[in-house]
Length: 108
Image (cartoon, rainbow, N blue to C red; front, side, top):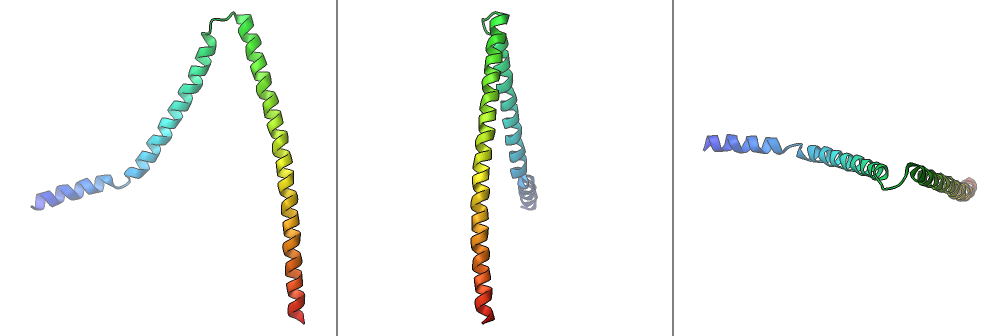
């Protein structure tokens, strides 16, 4: 009976921290999957049945599109950020005026 308890406690001790190992494994699996997808994409481009000149032309066009999308996204993020800043300033002014009014009423 004592041996059974010892074995049982050993088994329980092995399970402690298993969540940490699971999280690490999931992160590792995700990283490997991401690297595999990127590698597959580039290998597909390399072995596609196109001439070198046509491939380079298509690659340059796709890179140009990505750059344009990136520029547009940055401009859009800037506009959204500026709008957020303006709303925040308005909210700060509103709250500070309420605080000032409250302080003034407390004085009297």
